[in-house]
Amino acid sequence: MVGVSVRTLKRGFPELFGKTVFGYLTDRRMEWAEKLLQQGNLSVTEVANLVGYSNPGHFAAAFKRRFCVTPSQSAIAKQQVKQNIPQLSDIELPATNAQMLVQTHISVTGAKMGRC
Image (cartoon, rainbow, N blue to C red; front, side):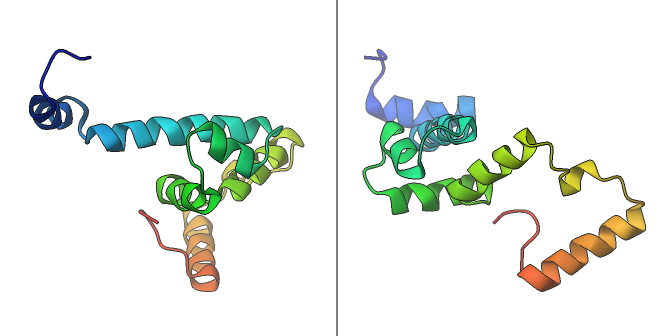
């Protein structure tokens, strides 16, 4: 369909896009899923099916790897924004207080900085 062999596609795609064909497609599916979840009118299972996952558990794991939150947490966060509930990121704190808050969050939740 593309006019190149599978081997050429597998070699050249990462050079152009910085990831494999599969990785690229997975990223697009996850971005689409995030948009659907944030609209708030579909369940996690419905979104999983729409973006091509037959197993909601596999979808949830892939979503969490990509966004560091579960699909449900993503949908809830969007609902909170719609209700104008202030988010932690909206609160301006001096650097020292912000650093202390992050350290407290890490120690309480066991959260990791950077990649999930």
